[in-house]
Length: 332
Image 1 (cartoon, rainbow, N blue to C red):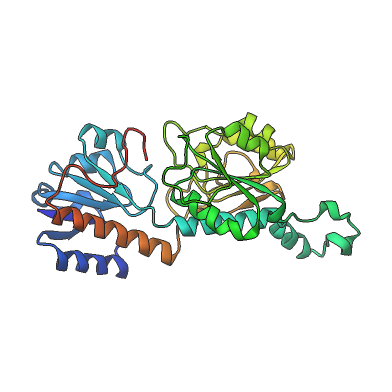
Image 2: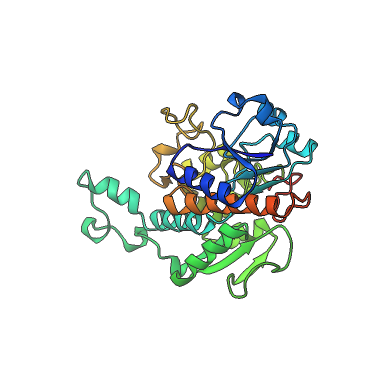
């Protein structure tokens, strides 16, 4: 038996390899390229730790019984095949606090007019009293806002916790009614009515994963309800109707701060705009290159979490019922 580490080849993952090897009586195999692993080795792989793989790579692992993903997103996996083969998947949600921190930073940047003010002052253009502008055009405090957080999982809960000291009214929106799994006092109100949340909020923070149920969930009608409000997205780009967002921003109805996008560079590092529409041309848009869960603390915590959970699964005898596994039908 063996575990394949289809991860970056760096000091951190070499340390996780050593930890697994010390803890377990199974072979630990570095596999930056699964197709290059000898067939005899692949035929004995019981677990795979990966940031993403193909249908062909999963098909080449006939004894595979568990996939561990050291991040929250699952869009890099062949979920249909994993469902067909009943292979459980575990992913990491321990990065929620850092993604939430990014959400707060984006909200402060948009509401505080920080990026647009920086951009203008670099050209000598002032705002506020120094420009003789009315105070009504100046920045907004979070303390005067109602903020709706769409999704009350790990990221949503951390966002509410970090937002609380600023003093806004905080609404949590979730699929199911009730407060199961939510600490007392975290939200001022929770509910399932997305339209009502957009209608009452000054700012909306989206933390949703990409699933068949959430793709395109937030559309033009929601932006009309949010009129003159702020949208922050740290969930997944395709949760939002891309063209509807562009039109709302272009019309001045919505300002936004975005960390998770509609298109990504391929290959990595190529120059590439993150939307089919020129959102970069508007001063009321703050753009972040999907960094919410990508810092040393977040990636370290996520990697250790998945390595430990895979090791615990092996130690428990590789049970078919894996605690904390992704619901592959729902996609998260």
